[in-house]
Length: 378
Ligand code: OSB
Ligand code: MG
Image (cartoon, rainbow, N blue to C red; front, side, top):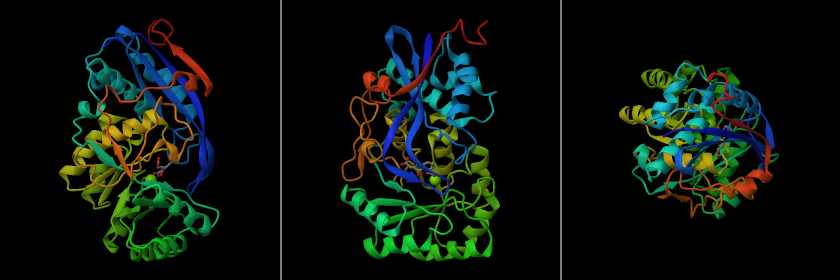
């Protein structure tokens, strides 16, 4: 495939419901949409789903814009590649910046799959025709409002609920949800907001008694040992998210029993290829995986569906329907869930098309990258 030129757009969409994690609250999100132009008018689409602030990981929308336009796109535009994997290998020398890489790499997979008239799921080796989708609920101003949100999502047909927790918003909201909704598939995500001080450990031990499917990322990303220490003391499986950004960190985590479940995010791992490799490693170690999300617009959401079609994704994902987050998505038809089940599209590429008019209406800025103007092409 030959990539003649590329565009990158910063696109803003309002959220239907404000989302608060342990660090901040958001009402709209700015994601970067990448378009790669191949031969015969074929296009590949990708989404850089970085948060605006470096609270989840060190990247931001701005750093992703800078890395994508100054480093990643110039290395692939104006050249001919055998595959998405070969092309993305061009930026092996670029360290880190996984969200930026994932969004551009996604466009490479989409383009390759469209040129080959296959789906990205098929190209990745996916085996499922549907994936089980759950919802992630933010910290709410009150327990009453949280219970309303859980009720709304259960009514929408989702069967698994994840609650964001943080010190001070922990056992009370979780036990309230348990009391109100009984034996639902429930888990918590702390986004690294706890430490090993006695008060926090006490809360984590209390959460261990709530029958949770897992406790996601209680401690700091780099603190694998703290996760291993807690895992030896509690029954509930610990799930890692922020801590696993590479196969090496996953290998370390597995070797010290720091997690018994893995959240795989395409963005955090640095792309679909790296996400698949993490899946393969976890499966060979007997660790079940599920696909996490970053409130993706439709393109990133479609990539989450494609990776979730791999056989090891046996736990319910965070891949909910577009409408959970956005009144209108950037796609010509939104991603839907039927009683918490999302179909893996069989169409070419990621299986969804971008609504170009709606995209343009919501674009804050756009840059075109041509081979002649790329910094490394001279
Ligand atoms: O930790 O999984 C997380 C959103 C932003 C940052 C971190 C996380 C999340 C989510 C959203 O939980 C899940 C989704 O996209 O539905
Ligand atoms: Mg998480």
